[in-house]
Image (cartoon, rainbow, N blue to C red):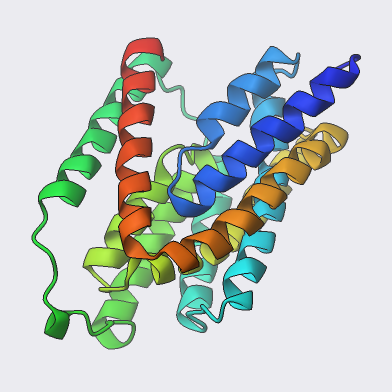
Length: 251
């Protein structure tokens, strides 16, 4: 990190990651290798990446809100549940074989694509959102486990959140993403705190990366509202396929 173009690279990569994460997910598969390439140890790269994601999701939330898209208080309920799960997840020390995990994650992502493509469209009368009662409690329980996964690994979690909220809570994809960025912001705070407590964060690098992440998050949040569900669905399918291929063949 002793050359000026290293910082420029961080901002450019950060912009792409922020754009991708806000509309779909999997952007950290770009930022983490970049941080490691620039000399950060893997654990520090993982912690440093959380700085940029916290800022990215905060700005993306503001972007959605500026367009009048908010799911409060539903998003806060899920965020608190995931926050508690992420504390546990970030503290779990489990030795996972990287190659095996990547192949499993690749298969999960391909399954996501098949669901997105072949799941019958919800009828208009079925699009009434289900954000209260048993569906709220089901979501709170599921997002606790999402939080554990997010605190420990996080890769690909955005795709799972999108599918769950779209098909279980029956939210359109714009409102799903508006909810997702709030939830990620909340639970990422606890994960970042654990990494910081263990001195696994390079704050300078993280804040520079966050310049790109935040900008990408702001632009994509407002852009996705304007374009609507059709654009998000297409973008989501393309990104899931790319990430699955990357994980399966290149680790």
